[in-house]
Length: 611
Image (cartoon, rainbow, N blue to C red; front, side, top):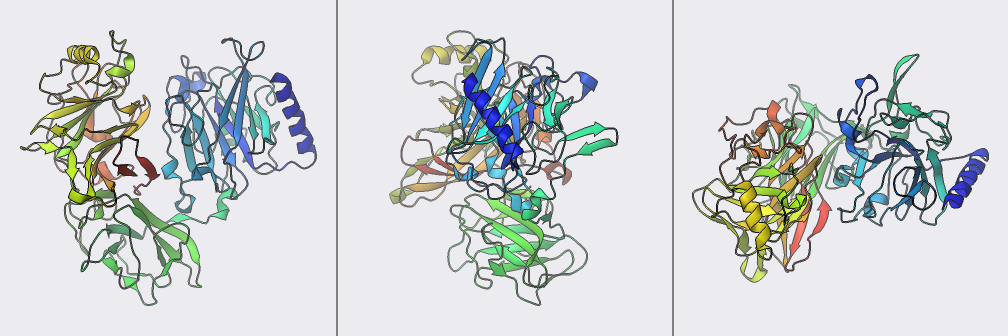
């Protein structure tokens, strides 16, 4: 293997001498020690913050060639280490294989791809047509291998080098890393990074590869030289997809699931005080054809006013049963587009229920209490079942027969005075259970229910077949005997960041029931989120079950060690309706999952709302 890597390097240098043109380049990798963290100058990561290990093992690539197909490509990582020897003296090799998933089929120039062992995948957020250029894919033995082979890997300050090969096994880039350029000098408190704007002529041995005391995971690299603060400029690479955020007119409410005589409709809102002429603008239900529906000449929207398009008039047809997307693109007056664009992606929705922004005109999208076509939006629909408490990083160590992962749990709360079954009977359509999805997946048994004003727990082990674990779990946490406990969930709650979703099966047809999102939370272990819940012995507790809880301000660390599983939260405090600022960034609305009448994991398609 070591001999093969040497040949790879020779080939790369030869190609460079003949007029090297890179399809994709190495931009950065993390050499920061899990123990030391960033020490030099106290710098940190612009996305991950200042933390031990700077977010674990990760590296970052930049796509140079537009419409690049990376399906079946391989990334080989080698480094010298004092760890167990493999395959040669002091050398360790890791191979990561990109799958045939459509994510890799059409990458646009200027895309930043990060491969992380710890940070959850965000593949559903990749949408260059609205300025979302970052893809993060998690490569770990605990993942399902959907985007990249389920394999742990390591990068370090010990001569880590990456080589990228295409689906035919030909070297595309590399090896690149410490020992090639720079020859040495990347320490355990630093990152390896490219301090230059990546372009087709960037070579694996570029003199602009160096060490740095800060990183910019998923963002263009930043550094300081004699001229002052510097940053990579991706504008030329990304000019292949003209885009700037459209802020004067936004998509405000969508009625996507209606049966005759009702119609689907799309509501726009003018955020300015001046009328806007929409003549020659475009509406579309997908990114493939952004010019799908031409808005007729003479169409205007009044200042601070609304404009509603009915499906019979434009015409369009939204798939509310399964979820879809809506794009509004600004016309240039000559039959084309300026690049100004706003959009929203949404999952399945019940008949007669709309998605709308809250706060009106500026917030993220929620399932609404009522439809308000042509007027200010109603409040979001919340409950009665909510995600109420999460133990994602127990302090440990676990007491036998439990292992550390068995101490994780997700708690649901019923904020009503009647029992709520976790199953829906659609008659001839079938019987379908509710699901927990996201970082962990669990299909509730058809007998499951959440007691009135009560709680249920979902855990990593099977309570029905592992009674000793169940008894120890209840003892450790003091769980009330009356609390239902279900499991095992598939997957593991990530210690850095994770999304947990509660889904209800909607009306079924042909043995398939769309799973409607009823509650969601994406937690972090940095920023405004409580840090003591990250291995400090506390849980994340919801402050108020009656308001949306996707924002960090709606959660707190439990006052009790171990949290309050099966009981009222220790931080419970009824608060007023969410303010505009509290809900401006409530994050992702979710994935469309199709639950089938089997015990198999549901299929997944990425859908999200703009927020």
